[in-house]
Image (cartoon, rainbow, N blue to C red; front, side):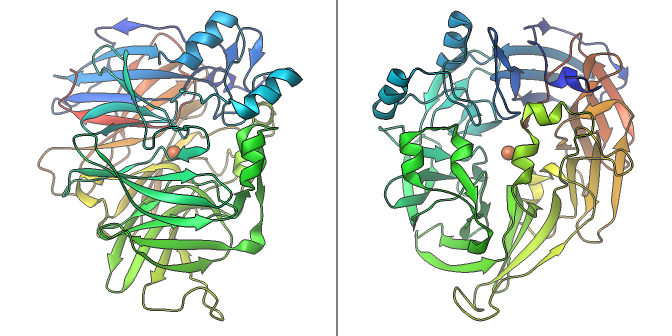
Length: 481
Ligand SMILES: [Fe+2]
C-alpha cells in the first residue's frame, strides 16, 4: 500500500491494557460508561492476507469513561477462527470475501461438511442481557465487558448452522424488552425469517418471507408495529452457496431489473402485510423507520448500486486514486393503503435528505428509535474537496431541513461517530460523539470527543498505536468503568 491511510489496513494491532490515557482538552464529567468497538485487528494470517475490508480477525477496543478520565483495553476476540489462523499461520475459515486456500479434495469435503466462521467482527450489541460481538455468520460471540474475554456463543437457529446468515444490526424494542433480527435460511426455496429474542434468551420465529433467489441484506427496518425486509437486487442462487466455489459475497450478482421490493411484516402477529416495490438500489444500513398515518417511512443510507462492496477490496483501497462511492441518506415512504406489487407506476418513491456522503450513521436511538420526530444523524463521511481515499470526516445532517455540518482534519480518518446523549437533555443534539480516529501523520489513533451540537472538538485521548479501520461500536452507559 502507498496511501497515507495505509496504517488503517496494515499490521497487527498489539493487545494493551492502559488504566489511564492522556487527555488533550477535556472529557465531560457526566460521560460515564464504556464504548466497545469491533473491527479487524489484523488482515494477516501468517504469510497470507485477507482480501477485503470486511474480512480480518476481530479485535475489540474498549474505552471506559469516568470522572473525566479514560481507560483503554483491546483484545483479539478469542474464537476458533482466530486461534487456528494464528496456530497454523494461514487463513483457516471463509470470511466475507476471502476463502482459505484448499486442495481439490478438501474443497469437495467442505461441500459436505463446511465449517462456519465464529469471527464475529462487525458490531457490538447487548442481546438478552449479554454483551455480544456480532457477525453475519450465525455464531454470535458473548464477551465479558471487563476482561473482553469470550464468554459463550449465541445462535438464532439451531443446527445446521451452515446455510443461514443473519444481520449484525438487531433492533431492540425497549417497550417489550425484546430484540428482533432477520435470519436468512438458504434452501431450494429460501426464507427471510424474523426472530424475536427475549431477555431470557428465548428465541421465537415470528414470521417469514420466501425467496427463490435471496438478497444480501445487512440490516432491516423496524417500526413499532412492523418489520421491513428490503430485498436489494444483489441476489444469490442458493445452490451456489451450497457448493461454495468462491468466497461468500462473490456468489451474489447485481440484477437491477428486479427493482427493490420492500416486504412488510406485522412483527406482533408474523403476518406478511404486503410487498411494495422501489427502483433498484443498494444499502448496508437502515437508519431509522417509523409509522406516519397509513405510511411507513424509512431513512436508509443508500447507493445507486453495489459498487461500494467492490470498492472495499484492499487492493482497490491501496490505489492512490481510489474513491469510494458516496452513500446518501434517502427517505422512502411506503403507503400501506396504496398500490402494491404489480400495479402500474406503483413504485414507491424517495427523497434525498442531503448531498453529503454518509455511512455508519448514528442518531439518538435512546429517544428517537422508531420515532420520526428525530432531527440529527451523525455519520462517517468523505470530504467533497478531498474525495480520494477513505472516510476522512464526520458529518452531521439535519434530516428535517437538509442542512449539514462537517468535522474535517487533513490526514485524520474518523470511524463511526457514536452519539451519547447528556443525561436530562432537552435539545436533540445535546451530547457528544465518540469516534476512533487514525492520525495518519503521527501513525497512531485516538478517541475523539466532539460536541454533537457544534461538532467542535472537546477532547481527545491518544492511544500508543494505530487502530485498524473498524466498523461498529456501542456505548454502554454506567457499565464497566
Ligand atoms: Fe453495519
